[in-house]
Length: 235
Image 1 (cartoon, rainbow, N blue to C red):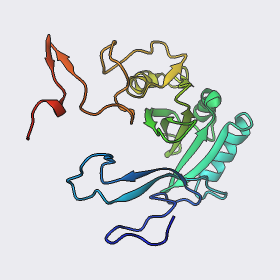
Image 2 (cartoon, helix red, strand yellow):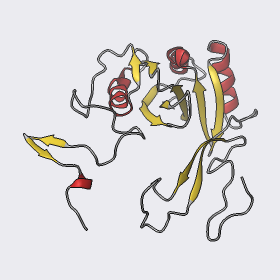
Image 3 (tube, helix red, strand yellow):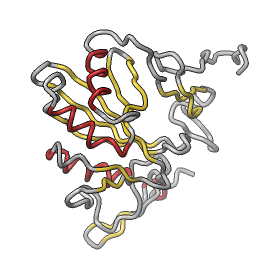
């Protein structure tokens, strides 16, 4: 990348907004809203911003993070923890999808960890991260130790399967259904993986980045409402 920036455009770096060394750049976003190929009347059409994910953090991690990671590494299978990220004073562990249930079991039951509460799972779609386009992100709270930790699991778009953790954290039932509904991540072993927001016959998953925005006809009580971008012409 050139060190010279066009006039009135901010400088960019390989790290983007990431605050950890070795950030992984997965895309470059243009304009304020990522609009491509159309006229931009916002005034931000010249902006260029690299989309970067935080890279792995070397030891020592600081705070209680070192003890928790070492404890979990000793309990879980070899290689279950793919990457440790400490970013903005938050601890994220990237877990192999085949090991997520085992890791959650240790996270909940081990006395030194004791993360009793999972506040849910959400999805993320990175269409340009080849082989890891879909991410499931879990947030945990240890009431015993007053600590928070995040687990992240990825799956390819061609095989969007991640084991369900409902057997360990039953309250995750509806959160996994919502993540399947909006992102298309299939949680294997879920007791009833059905849509929770969209109709059962709805095509696609609306929070994926490749989902058309505003271009879907909506049928409501027998009346078809055209998509917003076709309702009115200003020409």
